[in-house]
Image (cartoon, rainbow, N blue to C red; front, side, top):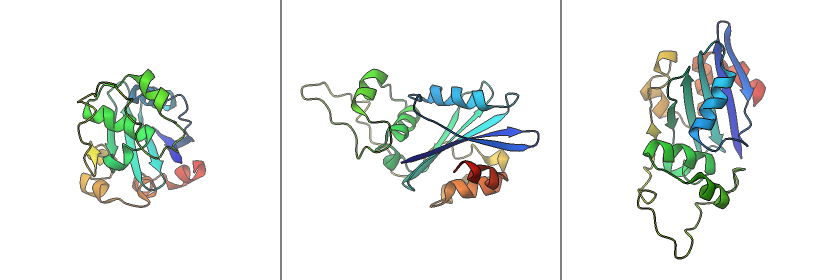
Length: 175
């Protein structure tokens, strides 16, 4: 089961909203959703978490490209939204239609989709996913969370990030 939330920075602090990922198929979709939640093109941070197996942070600042961090890429790769983020970070091009036909996007899938018999293997997709963190571990430094602190987070990572950002109550309201 997934938990996802958007935190939009405002002049008065942070505003959080529970995020429905049903229509999110790509990082671009997630970034667009974050931009819709933004106040005056300010920073929006999207949190994704799957049952303490992994967490992801996607930061969107106005029209800039989104910055992504995943706590455990190998674990994330075994879930649809985690695979979407890791594939983006690894520069993998996936045919979205084929991928969606073989995945259940409710977060309950147990593994990667099987290759179809007789189908040509995509060598780019066979690139090993690193065990451990992947992405931009410095994406929250200017908000008070250093690379070292982000890499050290474990079980209640999103709660600790919210504490550092000063928005624990706002995040808990949508949990």
